Length: 134
Image 1 (cartoon, rainbow, N blue to C red):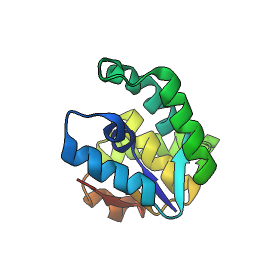
Image 2: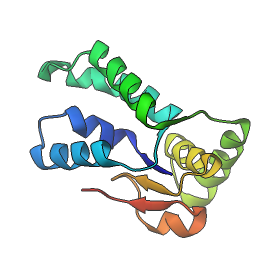
Image 3: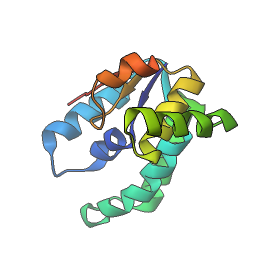
């Protein structure tokens, strides 16, 4: 399965960078075997408040998550995600929240994560291919 990080979802609605917006929209529209991580959904709802000056409302953010959950597999965290996140944060120099996303991918059978936040060196340690879509 393939997942996107929060930043990709935010770029789909952020008009400040037209190139990233177009790439993010194309990716999320055409993503095969998509997975929506619980944490990414929650972070998107929270971070989308910053898009209010551009006309994107919290109600629209909630509708976007509902729409994605109809076409992508919704991946809920397990208890093991916390343990893996702790290990990843310690061994891979990740913040706790970044480690949680990668751990959720590992636990959820996600083999590819689209994000601009990590480099591909994380792939060897986790088995999750990291792809910067921008």
